[in-house]
Amino acid sequence: AGCAPLSAEDVASRSPGGRHLEASDDEGPPHLGGIICSDDEYSAMAYILLQPKEVAIKTLFSQSMASGAILDIPSLLASYVIIFGTTILTFGSAIPVGLFIPNILAGACLGRSFGQVLLNVGFDVHPGVYALMGAAGALGGFSRMTISLAVIFLEITNNMYLLLPLMLVIMLSKTVADKFGPSVYDIVLEANPDIHLLEDGLNEDHHLVLEGLTVHDVCTAEVVVLRAFENPEQIMRLLVQSTFAGYPVIDREGRLVGLVPRAQLVATLAQRKHEAAGGGGLVSVMRLAETAPEVTNWKTPVARAFHHFRALGLQHLCVIDEQH
Image (cartoon, rainbow, N blue to C red; front, side, top):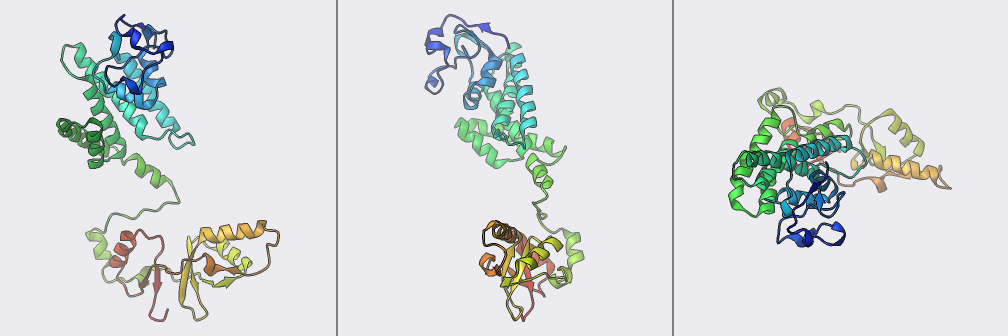
């Protein structure tokens, strides 16, 4: 991470104070001078880690640097370790760092280091292309995106000739990563107890088990309901004694007229508690409820109800008979 001298050419093209010409430098190779070094020196690792991420990524995708500067292999590998390590440590915290840009930057460092190795042994290659492939592989490995990721990088490069190698890198990265486990997004969703995901579909074994079953056979028999108007004490008792995320609302004849989420009931009770006149009076449950919940007949086959539930992305599906 020490400072290395720049060649005399193009040093004057840097702005006063050694600041890097960022957006206006599109016509020539990037200048690495300054940052933590003097105007006539540069540090590759400092440039990658301390510059804005979009500037660092653009530099890694470039073929060569101005004034004889080189993104050397030790600096690239050290930057990769630092970026990858800090990404793991900060993911899931309140720090707004994300995963997309850090993985692009880390993958570009790793890919360009391989391209630099080929340059050092005498091959005439574009190290920026290897940085691009490294970034695509890193994103494909952690996100498992395929077509959308190839389109994103195709828009970045605007070069149709890179489409085939990008597709090969992304598919190879996804295939290798699938051997070790699910994507990071799947792991995060499974770790969140508030999110429940259904399977993609029913296989043959499921169909054999569910054949002949209706929703009446699998739904809960202990139905917990609310009236249009309820005492706060009754609502509190219901919330304490059950863990359902939603409660059906019925009228005087016992017919379904709505569905109220648990979160709405909790928020309403908390608001009434903090109000000056809180405590007395009935709670208008219908004012909090969804008046047109999704319903299915009690004779509906389970497999059909499953596809209905999953296709519409439902959280609740009320089961009713002919009278309700």
